Image 1 (tube, one colour):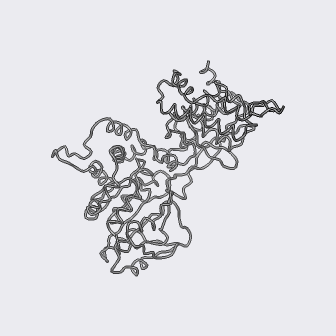
Image 2 (cartoon, rainbow, N blue to C red):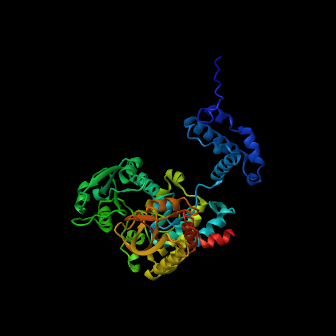
Image 3 (cartoon, rainbow, N blue to C red):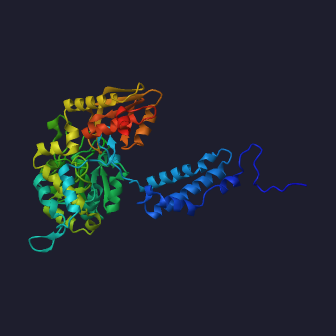
Length: 493
C-alpha cells in the first residue's frame, strides 16, 4: 500500500523538510513574554521588545523559505534566537546620531558635523536649554521683544555693519535677501561666480526660487566693470557678488572687486550684495595661511548686505548671518520669510557665545576648535602624532604597524580650495588586511573612527584628532580581528 506523503518525513539526506523547520520556530507571544521577563531588558519599552521579536521570527522564516538546504538548524536554538532578539533591541535603543573621531584631516567636514563648538558656547546652550529665557521678551520694558537682539549688537560690533540678523543657514540668508531686494527684477552676477556647493545648492536655482531674474555677465574666466554697466537697465534690482569659496579660477582671469561693484551701484542707484559663503572674521594670513576675504572687509567696501555661514570658518553653530546697512536690513527683517527661516534658542545661545570670543582674536583662535585646528603649530602636530604612535605601539600584536608620514590637511566646508596645510599622519598597516577593510571595521567601532585612504594606505590625520580621543583610537585598533590589547585584557580581568 502506498504511504501518503505528509511532508513530515525526514529527507533521504537526513535533513528536516522546510515545514518541519518552520514548525520549530517558537511563537511570537512566547518570545515576547520570555524577553519581557529578562532582567536585561527590564527598562526596554514593550513596543521595542515586540518589534524585535517579530522581526527576528520573520527574518528566520524568510531565511528558511529562501534556502532551506543552506539553513543551519542551530539558528533555532533558544540561545541563538535570544541573541538575535537582543541584538535587534540593542540596535533599536541605540541613538542614531553619535559622536565619532574625525581623523580625516578635513577640519570643517560637512558630512561629520562641520565645526565643533567652543566650550563657552556649549555651556551657554546647556544653561539656556534647561531654564526659561528672555528669547522674545524685553526685560527693560516687560513687553515682547525680538530674538535677534541677542546677537545683533555684537555682530555689528565685530563686523562694523549698521544692522544684522540671523537665519537657519546661509542658503536661507541668500534666498531671503534676494526675495526682498530683487523679486521680479534682474540680478546681475558674473558668470564665473555662479557656484554650486554641496547638496546641489546652486546660485541660479536659489535665484529662481526667490523670484529674481538671473542676468549673467562676462565669461567664465574674465569679467570687467563694463560688463555690469552695460547690463544695467530699468528692470535691474541688484548687483550680486558671490565668493567662489569652493573653487578657484587661475591663469588668464579677471574679476570685478566688491569695491568696484559698490561704486557702480552708487552711481546707478542699485543695492549691492555679497555672498561670502563660509565667511570669516579672521585674516588667516597672520597665521601663515592663504588670504580669505573677511566680513569686515566686505562691510568697509560698502556692500549693502553681506551673507555668510555661522558653522564653517566662523566656528559656531549652523546659521546664516546677514549684516549690512540699516535701510536694507530693515527691509529684509520685514520679509514674511524670516519666520520660516528663524533660528531657535539653542542656536542663538551658541552663536552669541561664539561671537563674544571674537572680541579678543587671540582668545578666539585658542578656544574655537575650527580656528585652533587650522592654525595649530607644526610642533603641536608633531607631538600629537608621537603620542598617538606610542599608544598604537602598545597594542600587543606582531601584525600591526603605525608609521608616521608627512601629508596635507584641508580646511573643508567649501573654503580655501587651494589650501594644503602640512600635517602628520599615521599610516596603519595590519598584515593580511586591506586598507579598505581597516577603514570599514573602524567605522563600525565604538566610537567610530573615520580616517582616509591614500595610495592604498589607511591614514589617521592627527590635525583633527583631539588629545582625549587618542585612548579611544588605541582601543578601536586593538579590537580589530586578530589582535589582543594588553590594556583591554587587563580591564576584562
